Image 1: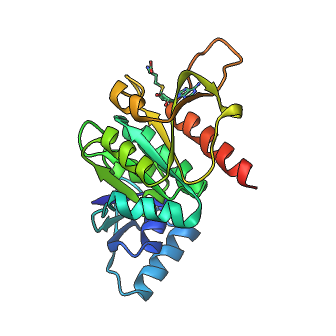
Image 2: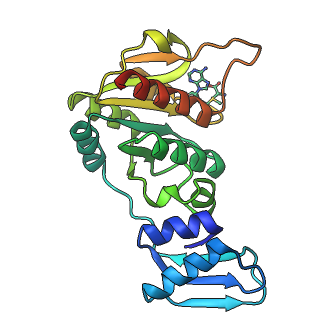
Length: 227
Ligand SMILES: C[S@@+](CC[C@H](N)C(=O)[O-])C[C@H]1O[C@@H](n2cnc3c(N)ncnc32)[C@H](O)[C@@H]1O
């Protein structure tokens, strides 16, 4: 996979995933020089080019997905939460959600193997490289995943309109928050398995939020209550 941009390359370097770096010799900056110096110190090949689409790019090892057991155990051990994404199609949205999730210390993000954006170059770039640190699990069936998490003691909330207000919702750890995709929201079979439907009340004329904003509000509320 090829990632581009100072943030993505710098995060990939921190994650130990970089195999080779390319940079545009005519567009150097302090941050690029730092990255190049660090890469050389680590013995990573660095290639200076005259014309490059981005100022800096890197070939990185493919993202390794975790399994559900790993992220569930991590959420239980750390008293944290999981984010389940029900068919998010737009890589820009997936990247934005991952960045928020890493910011709020989410133990893991769970995405379906099919009918969902997967972690690609765009996702890594939009996530500002944080997708390379996030623990992301892929599952075959999200409704069955909700069932399994409930058996492990997770309280699972479905973020959707028409539910209990977020202020009144039970959000103790271990918690799993299900966020719906752009077109259909949370699918009926997944919603049916959740413990409750929880909504962020609207104060204006727009009913719903972009899913990355909605996820950030849920994650902030979880953290606010723990503090
Ligand atoms: C853009 S919305 C999906 C809208 C979709 N067209 C529908 O009719 O359900 C994407 C997701 O963001 C979350 N979301 C957006 N606004 C929300 C709100 N006010 N309360 C709770 N969740 C919300 C939900 O998980 C929703 O499925």
